[in-house]
Image 1 (tube, rainbow, N blue to C red):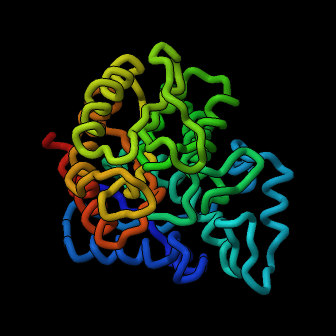
Image 2 (cartoon, rainbow, N blue to C red):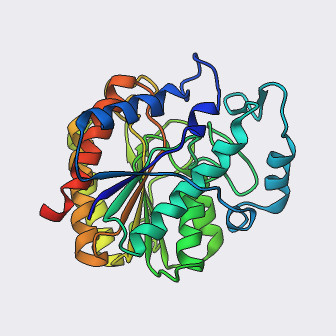
Length: 313
């Protein structure tokens, strides 16, 4: 089976400005790089709209209505100091979680082996009733809720390796009070948004692990080997969702972590092995951050090549 790439042109239409780190050239660079790879084990898919009801499994009605009622919008507006909406943002905001839902459905029904959702705006900072940190709706949480409620999938692991803590995703997992979810994060601290303190390893379904400024491949790989793998082995997931941000790369000046492009391929291989062992390879990755174009191109291609080779891992 093939690896699905989920993308829609509306992700170009969410305009944040060329000087904003989360701009539309990010996905343009990734898609161009994947096209240049010319991998025959990739297949592109469109991204449907997520429904109001699907988004409402994660976000409260008042917040959803607030976002939708901003449109039609004549000019860009700020939700906060770094999160904004432009006149054509709504379609991207609805298709981003729709991409994750579609990818989950197709992987579960064995139409594709695994998937990478090349979407924006990102989602893991979006809280139940608040957008923040470039994020409007929490794409991966909406997908997880769909997998649980509509596909009846138990034991869903959400792994977040963006350099920033996925505070919105953790908030939703905690609020769900459902031990069929696992949220596991490796992120820099201190760093925005100032959450995600080191977890007690005995905590059941939320596990946060810290990289300190200046750390890199060795420390990251140690956390994967000594914390992530044992946690997943204990949890035995039936589906894995991966919030993948490439902003921990040494070329990305939004953080102080020194990962290499190869680290993203390596961690993908590790997660693919766990997925193969426990859930027939059911792995859906979802783009979060990553703002240096060279790092994005190299890291995303390493990630996708590892996805396509997961049968051989």
